[in-house]
Length: 133
Length: 133
DNA sequence: GTCGTTGCAAAGCCTTTGCAGGGAA
DNA sequence: TTCCCTGCAAAGGCTTTGCAACGAC
Image 1 (cartoon, chains in turn brown, orange, purple, green):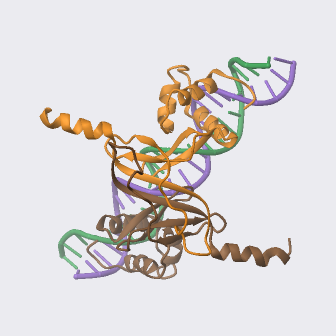
Image 2 (cartoon, rainbow over the protein chains, first blue to last red; image 1 turned 45 degrees about the vertical axis):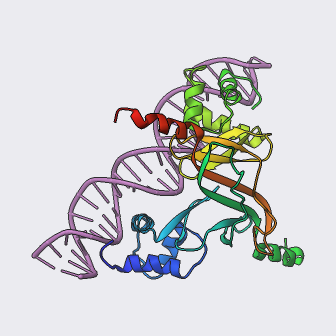
Image 3 (tube, chains in turn yellow, cyan, brown, purple; image 1 turned 30 degrees about the horizontal axis):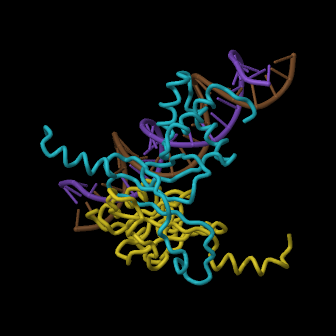
């Protein structure tokens, strides 16, 4: 990554405009709004470079695969909505590392994934009570 | 799953003889010790059926993909060793759900993944100090 | 004899890679 | 002009699927 190109600028811009972790498909779709010719291979290549550079970090969604988000944020975990499949960033961490693993295990890192329903989907559900079937 | 076949018995036996979450490749390899003709497609089909039946549950390893383990165990999480790449089952749960997500989010499930080094690898490391390069 | 199950091969995702043309510096 | 970057297509891993033969009951 030594040259500034429209493609790379577009991909970085996608992340600057969206806080939540994004799937490759979303990055491609949104990036094409700036650069219609944007190719999936370029997206993968750029994501790889940005991840190696430390500008992005990977987030593994249990069933939707690999997502990417900006790095440099405070320690946090993620919430996956079962209804809209969106990933949210959760502030803070309520995991107690002390005693999380038996003696002898050296804990170097951890990840917490919560799943359920997000505020938007819980709200939509109530409105839908009188919606057409 | 209505008929008892040597293949299915072999796959179930693999899980009965191993506590830790297993990768598809491991299941195939160990299953072939009983049924040499065992095919990868049969393994995938059987794992799917056993998972739908609730006899197995999937565990997602951040970088090694999907693993499978027996269900019906007490609530627990997993530890992945960075050195031997093995997955371990951790007893208990030290995550505090209260306050784990902001108001409005409904938490229905959660997963915790710890990573680092397992006792076996930490021990091996010490012994290796005098090993040949 | 039925019809669920298996092995094999082909196909489907997702991701990576080889290559020649194109564009930033 | 240089040579890094891009698009395209092919290929690689993992998983699923179509199909004919097989075998549990």
